[in-house]
Image (cartoon, rainbow, N blue to C red; front, side):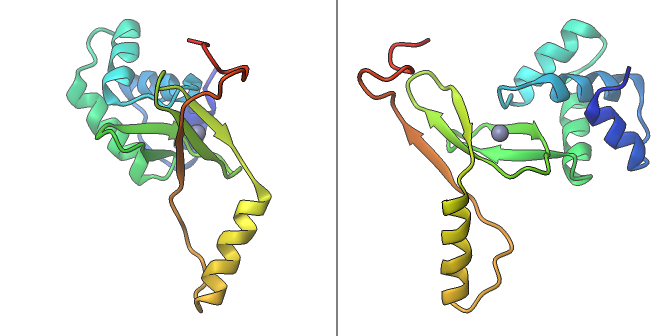
Length: 143
Ligand SMILES: [Zn+2]
């Protein structure tokens, strides 16, 4: 069975070699926003003929096609996730490196309002939150 990401690639008319399929599948099942190194390790576990250069090329191809998104959490490593219709943001736990996803309608409205008040139509934005778990919260001490 094709992963969601492979399916979209096929629909977009991308030529899907076996190695591209493996890399797409790795990205499609990932929930942790992996970087290229991590994608490479997972893909090479499935098919050891896959090189890091192939992963770099494929990730760029998928990014250019708009099926995956590049994320920057300020540590110099580009991360990737499957592009979804539903918009969301990320909170980065600076202790564990865990990435927590969230969305907030209020935030979306504020961004629209700010752009509008400045006389602009909003086309895009970047927003990441960085934090450490609060004492006593469910996340506190979780590793
Ligand atoms: Zn995400």
